[in-house]
Image (cartoon, rainbow, N blue to C red; front, side, top):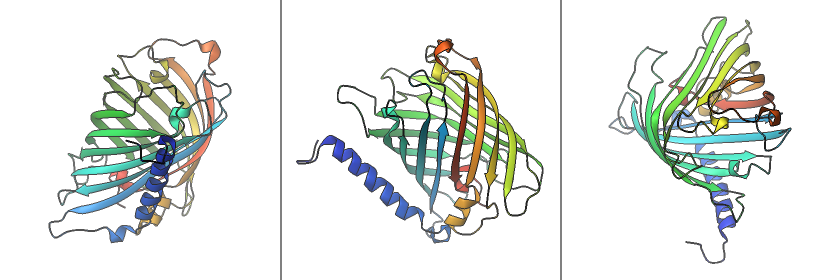
Length: 305
C-alpha cells in the first residue's frame, strides 16, 4: 500500500532515515543503562559495521571497481534467561555503495530472529557458538523500475566467532564462520541452498601501551554447492594485512566499548581457487587491495569485558 502523496521511492528513503536516526538514539545509551527486570530479563544493545575501499573487488561488472562499500548493524536483543543464552532480537542494517552499477547493495534490511548460545562459562573458544533462525526484509534505495529483486529471505543455521586480541600474548588469532540455509538469499525465489562462509586471521601483535597493532595472514571463503555457477559465491582466497586499534583499553559504557574494537586496516587478497564453476578470469582481476575501518561492541562475540 502506498500512502497518498508519497512515492514508493520516497517511502523507502523515509524508512532508511527514520530507522538509522531511531537506532542511533538507542545506541548512544550507555551499557550501564540497560534495563533488567525482576525476572532477570535484559535488553541489550549492540552495533557493528565496516566501511572500506576496494580496488577491484573480484567483479567483472566494473573494472577497476574503485568503490567504497559500507554497512552498519544496529541490534537489540531481549534475553529470556539470566545466563543470556536465549533471546529474540531485532536488527536494522543499512548498506551503501558508491558504485552505481551495484544498486542492490544500497538497501535497508530489517531482521527479526531468535538466537541461542548453548555454551556458557569460561570456555572462551566455544561460548560464541550461536544457532539462529531469522526472517529478513530489504527496502532497496535505488532499484531500477524495470527490475524485480527478491526482498525477503528466511535463514537458519549457526555461526561462530573467536579472537584473543585483548589477551597478554603475541600470537593472535581471529576466526569467524557462518553456515546455514538461505531461502532466497535476496537473489532467486528458488535459491533454497546451504551457504558456508568465513575467514581466519593469524598474526603477530607487538607490545604497545593502550593500542594494538596487528600484522596478519588470513584466508576467506564462501561455498554454495547447489549453485556452482555462482562463481562469486564459491571461492577460496588468501592474503595479508595490518590492523590498528587506537584505543584497546575501553571499559564501562557503550561508547567506550565500541571504540575498544574500532580499527583501521589495509589488506591485499588473492583468489587462489574457485570452488564452483570457473568464471572468465580474463575479465576478472584476481588480486584485490582494500583499506577501511570497522567497529563493534563485544556483545556480538559474547565478550562483555
